[in-house]
Image (cartoon, rainbow, N blue to C red; front, side, top):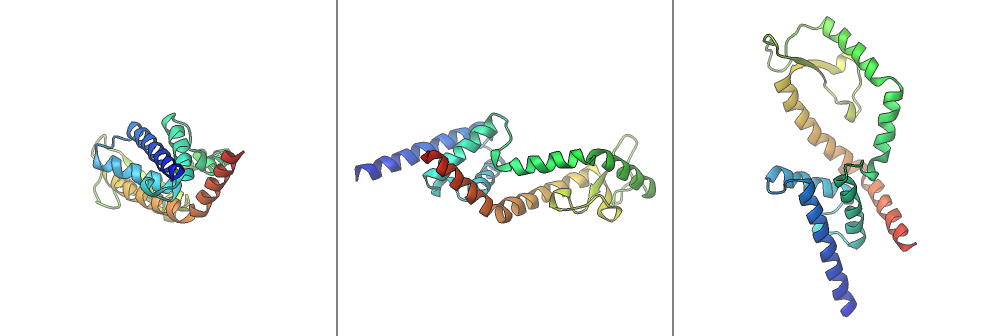
Length: 187
């Protein structure tokens, strides 16, 4: 009975340490930031902090400490590899060429609100299907938007990206990483 109580106390302390780190990373006094923090936690351990077992809480603490230091989350090493691959293939130079050619063929008007920009206002070339969701740099996948419309669309796309990337595809990957972490603790 004593060992079970000790384990419960230990998990409680670990969870509190994680909450403290979360409060340093996100301003959890604000509702939106609190939700961002919860989504981030759920996406990285496939559980809520309150229901996660000890190994998941330890794994989460490791990831939170990396995030707090400003390091790239070790769960996303694959993302880093993909980004470097794109850069190596000249992604940015190619995008600038495609963007310039697209702007030359389209009238300078926002596709959503149909407003022409006032002097000094910027229009942006937007991917209809974002690159992060397997969109391509093809004219059929591009549109001109004003910054206001682009920002509205981007926030929605960001939410969709988080849902797709973390909640469906990554569950087996996260489970594998947690098992590897647990095995490293045993050594």
